[in-house]
Length: 122
Image 1: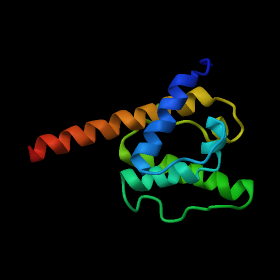
Image 2: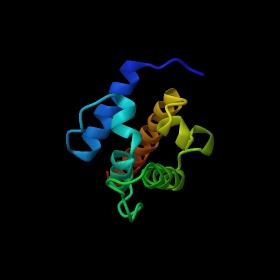
Image 3: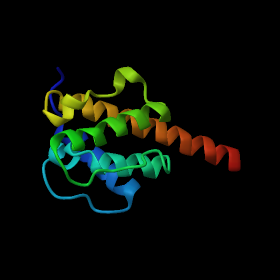
């Protein structure tokens, strides 16, 4: 397992806040992302309507469903399956570096969509 990189984690949080256009809740990296609410909002910002229901609060099982919805949405968005973290990687803090890798991959794909659409327009 890769060691955690706090700088990359902060870059991910900054990128998410920039995409969402709002401040993220305070807390540790994994705690901000754990319930999947921020991740679902991110997915809906990148691909509007990709997640129909976001569970703002509830049981662990209900909150894990947010993470699973996010995973399904980003798979459709083009993130390779091998780069998508497992729910337990985030929810049980088993492999936080994999979460970061996944979000970096999502950012890369989002950037390529943006540059392609600029090329199409320009």
